[in-house]
Length: 321
Length: 138
Image (cartoon, rainbow over all chains, first blue to last red; front, side, top):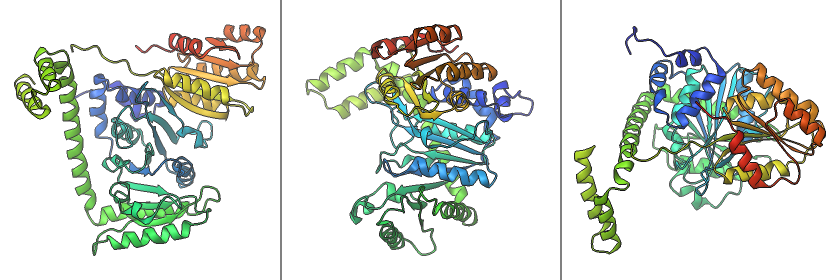
């Protein structure tokens, strides 16, 4: 953007920390409203300052309560904190009950906190399609840390690593046998492992096992995830958790892997946006197209296989897109 | 575009202001609104009018639903309405549910509450009303 180009009023309002303007802009981003593009464009230069921390893990391990404890500690350290709590949308009605807010203790009129609930709206992997851009808006709004709580469906909540610089995987004692943790997915994305509900028996053993697992997979000189134990009942370990996050962030900086990760994220984001544009133009082209309909009929009649049909559609689209 | 654009879901804030601890009604309503395709932000028990208004603004909702069984509705509901006005957010409509005598209901409607549901209200009626009174975005 050239310096002469006017900054849209909406962007100005975000930079001046207008909460209502932020809330409305988030809705527009969620609704994929194309009119926000100039606003997002103007705000991009004001982002990249907040740490984006992902909190993921299976249903009921205490992610929201843990975020509440972390929030209190970050506030005590003088930080401004944005929180995004994501819950699933119904595959039937498209509706959603967003209940992450319920765990968060707030002081009335506290300007340094902004909590937003998001429905996944059919996006897989534990976040919503708009989560990345919403986290960025909280960054532009001047938050020091943005905490993103994933849906919590468990083994496949791995998309958070595309957004967060540090991902915390929250687990509890007795979640399953050792083979569970050898499976691909959740256990691979952890920068920090957190055994929550450490006031319950079995936490020590779970932490020990995880530490062994982490050491087992570690290449010499590479980063090995830290394992901490927390309890939101007695408050133990929450400072250790924040120290572990700091240590990972420090590692990203000193090892120069941060640039590499950011390059990877930028590539993914650009490709995602291209894909989104293509599919948005694709759907109306495909729907009701008589040629596509006849291909569908042939596939149903078993006179054509789906891959061949797809190739024909693709070849046709290359001219039209 | 050939195809009609899908309407984004309505966002509704459901909360229980004050001190009564019975939230079954609020949960049943939340679920019915979810099944009608709305995104329901469930703020739960023991909310202050301040936390409700701040929450509704952060969540940019199209509608606020308050459930009260404690008898304190004549204090808490007008306080929410007044705070919305102070925060220039009185474009967000409010409905209430609970044990609210007719005379109080009349006064609350006069104070700006868009709809009031008693124990006999059907879920269909609540969903239909919620749709019709919700804020319509420009």
